[in-house]
Length: 70
Image (tube, helix red, strand yellow):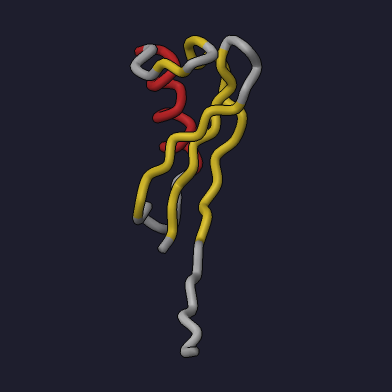
């Protein structure tokens, strides 16, 4: 399963991650950047370390799980 991870810094300088399942691919960097700007401007998320204050990074993460028969 793939996830889009949006990483921000909060007021304490700690990294906060917002994960979204099944992102549309190919990812449009301009749209991701605009979405992150909107999240910061609207101040719609809060963390234990305070408000989100800065964009850190965005990335696609893929996790593969393989069962082992025992």
